[in-house]
Image 1 (cartoon, rainbow, N blue to C red):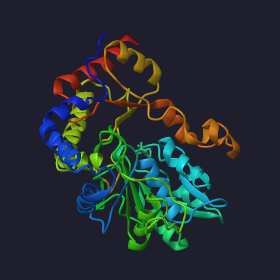
Image 2 (spheres, protein in one colour):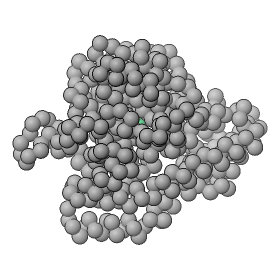
Image 3 (spheres, protein in one colour):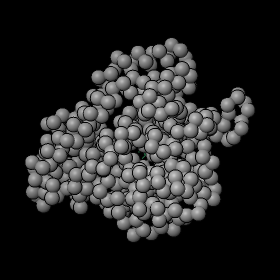
Image 4 (tube, protein in one colour):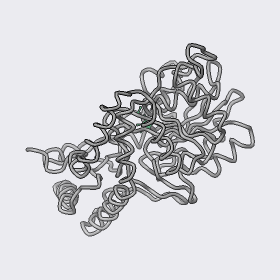
Length: 374
Ligand SMILES: *Cc1c(COP(=O)(O)O)cnc(C)c1O
């Protein structure tokens, strides 16, 4: 069957901004200035304002944002960096790329975010940074994490890749501690037409370090004070992101409306005992980069929905501590039971802003028919 409801549909959003995007692309083509430059600087100013941050450094991806942030903090071999066992791979991958050791912590099963009590117990004498993740668009419980970190002088790098515009106690996530990292991967709430990312820093000296690392550790041409990389953003991506940023609040509100609709539809369908809807964390807004439900018979339900033409996805089927590349860390199944259970139960449903109410009804009907059949 052809897909009736895809997991994502970026074409509808594009249709609504096609002319604006074409004008932005033409402007960059006319300038023939393709890397960094005025488009990227203008995007950085707009994002700094949007995120209520003193500064913002645009980079080549969310992954590179995390790596550049860790390098700017001087993290390297011999250092431990604490992070949740349940996230997108890049969170832990960037720690390993910096030469440090990822130290995993289990999650709160209700919010999928790192459990602050377990985080406290995971501290080692070598802990040099903490990377909490604001998974699916909701803030981690930051107050106790900030308290733990500040008491020991350990910097926090927020992985806010899925949470641009999320607020925790009325502050934008990414600016709650020392550094924040964002991603403009096309399916993030603010998506480029390719890869892109951002680092925000509380300390302007750290921000200039990230700027230097972004460009091979060089502030003056051909003089390299440290070894960085090519983490630069393209002007084309910056120009497109400037167009899209202006629409982001409306798009976010549409996702939140869709989430509320799902809640009503699931309730009306009598499905609340069969599936667990996303819990709302205290002190945080939710921008629903993903609308993730929990179901015991996840794989069978997913297959059933696929047959009905409904796109779903599993974020993430393997927790980080069980990834083959981290075998050397010596973890086994059972080390982080909440992360492992999440990996076997989570299912992301279509939530993009242009989703019609009738399509959401189809999604819920498909789930209902699965449980009636069972
Ligand atoms: C998307 C994502 C990243 C990486 O961003 P890219 O732009 O794809 O490199 C990092 N962490 C999390 C939690 C993400 O969702």
